[in-house]
Length: 320
Image 1: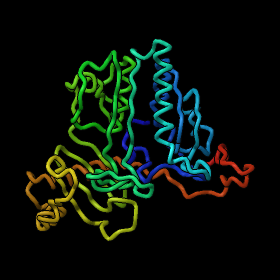
Image 2: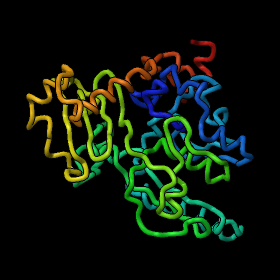
Image 3: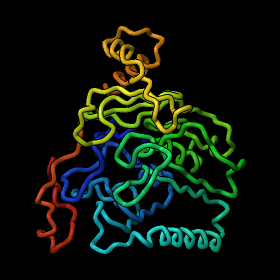
Image 4: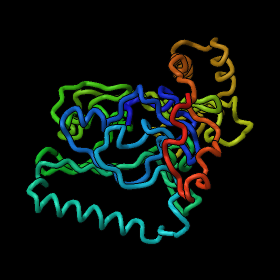
């Protein structure tokens, strides 16, 4: 939404829960706010998860004209999972049919994407990739995206080059006709999506940077320092290095196979040409931009008992 990596806006520890007196800082404009500035109407359906205790955190105050959904992860006691995919498929189909009826289909860009892999708690599998949601393994972070537009997509097929979710901010602004090369931490990849020929290329990105664990990608290589998830672990000081192009399942830890090189690099006495040294140095450089964590402990001030059994907003207005 912001076009910045989470560690740059203080959300590196995750999304916001019910009864949490915090939200994404309003100093970072959302994509929806920038779209409004370009005279687009904006609609949001589904989970918000970006803070709601203050009026200024609400979707309709962060650039959305209309919002139909829920603020946090809980939606009620009834299990809808069996029909969830069918319902979503049906709803998207209705939207497409409306666009065709209104003669807007040819001039519309449809993007279907995800921000994380599936979670094993609900039976999902990200095989053959390693890991799941809330980890920095490829299975928790790498997803598939579909982009469809009869008018604008000049060359069909797949796009294999590197793309990060922060790139959507600049890319979607470019789709509106705005001349833009980059925004925040993202770059405009619309030309690459349209034609398969990149105007700008991404060579590296950040998975996350946090006190418990960090990971970055540079070309073929991925560096993980510390934990791969938010659980307590003895791996907090461990360094892992993978060559993703030849080892997409992250099964061959180059660092584990070369422990002496790792120790020398950690103390900055390995050759400057070493990929490990370069990635560790890059991680140190990025940590200088680490924003203070804006997450806060849950507060009973937001308890449903105070609001007739419902999760409500405005209950932390006036708080710092």
